[in-house]
Length: 103
View 1 (spheres, rainbow, N blue to C red):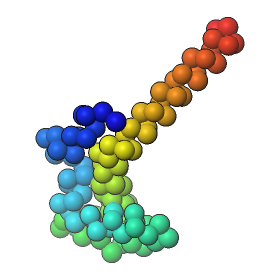
View 2 (cartoon, rainbow, N blue to C red; view 1 turned 45 degrees about the vertical axis):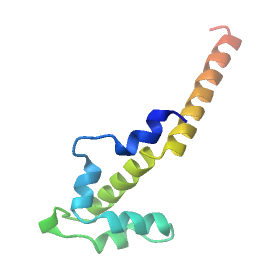
View 3 (cartoon, rainbow, N blue to C red; view 1 turned 180 degrees about the vertical axis):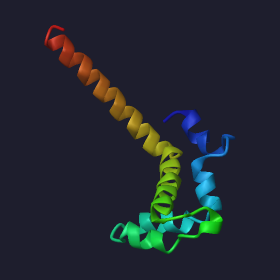
View 4 (cartoon, one colour; view 1 turned 30 degrees about the vertical axis):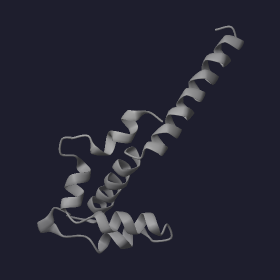
């Protein structure tokens, strides 16, 4: 795990789709879907449709919840470290395979 991964959640950023989704009130939807994978995303998203807040339909609500969860996962140092390790392993495997095949 790199030091930059640990400080990533505190790094100042520009306004993201996650922030827009949170401002639209979609944080509870994202957390509910994360906590209970048996929930139907379409049904749950319908509860959050609110045109004045910028949530015009269930697709918009689901997309907003996905943006919130994606950014949360992307700021988790442990997940980033595992993805990095997997990516390095995949690259090494690819290089080895190409050399083995004589390409």
